[in-house]
Image (cartoon, rainbow, N blue to C red; front, side, top):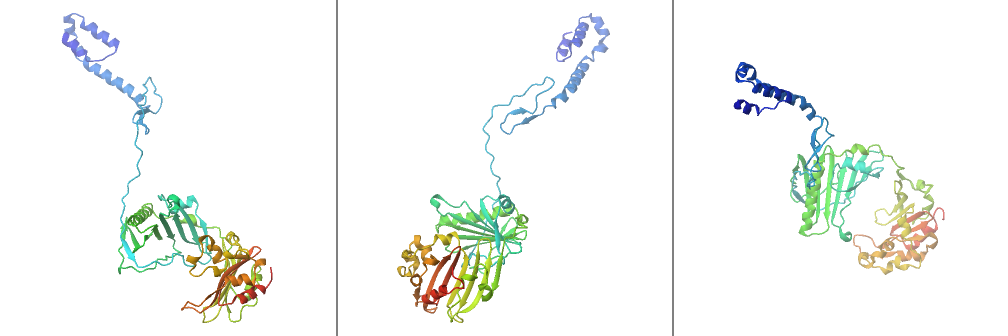
Length: 453
């Protein structure tokens, strides 16, 4: 009997079944032998009971899945347990490392040496107007870009996009020390690149950055780094400048150029569609005859009637855009270098800041400042001395004579008088830039304008 007890001790059954089994075990041996064919399957029945119990209990196990909380390494029960289940308490939080930035392959650039740089000024854009990009537009044009940018969209007069010019506005160090200057120009199909310089070697080496061909340049002896490439029919032109010629400066500029190019290509092409359909401001850019210029309702009254006879009319232009509203007239001497450039415009804050009174001769008397002016004119007076503004009621021949200076040392030019100054008439300012006319002639031009202020 002991061997049966040992066998059954390994089986778990309910109390009623256990009682029946024990009752049979306590009967006389001959009765046990008579029922042996029944009890030899008791173990199998007990195993079957366990299986059925598990089947009944298993559905409840999946009513409350256990999930790993991202904030710690313990377990958190997603919902309160049902059917008498046990709540799993979360373990104590542990210090989880901060997520790291994804690591991307950094493609290197081969720098080509160029002889010199041309002016960075853009070519003439007919009807040019512009708008600052919003944050949303910045994210579309420069998706996921690592630097903080300020950008301006430039348009043709018909509203079509010419280009986007962006600058990194986090490039200043302690005490406003100039560290790194980053400029990114994105040119759409209507624009055009101003890149026009010769390479030291006959053919530049092209770099492959994730399948995009990039031409990178530097100027020997200058901490300037440039790169250009085309992606999705959009031209990218990048310029990086650093503040010194030390080796560390060169490395910093080259590293920044590599990072910027890789980031632009990795993050994908610009979505320039967000810059479509701009509001076109009032624009005017047209050539006029002298008669039409004199008849201009805004500025014609400030043009002179008696220009010296040696000077012939050459051109007049009426121009209006977002920050400029002016009328300019140009007289010159044919086959000579002398000219009179007369420009009338709305007075700006900068004009009002440069007003000089007659007794402030230090601000306008050219006899006090011999050429070269970079050496003789104090920095704080430079804006006044180069182009002072006089109120119309203060203007005299003496002031004009103080503005004039004689040049006869330039072998490539003709000797004669030079002068530049401005005169304020209410909210209009007349700026004159003269070469070849005497102070007395210029004084008569102001005295005999079409209409006096």
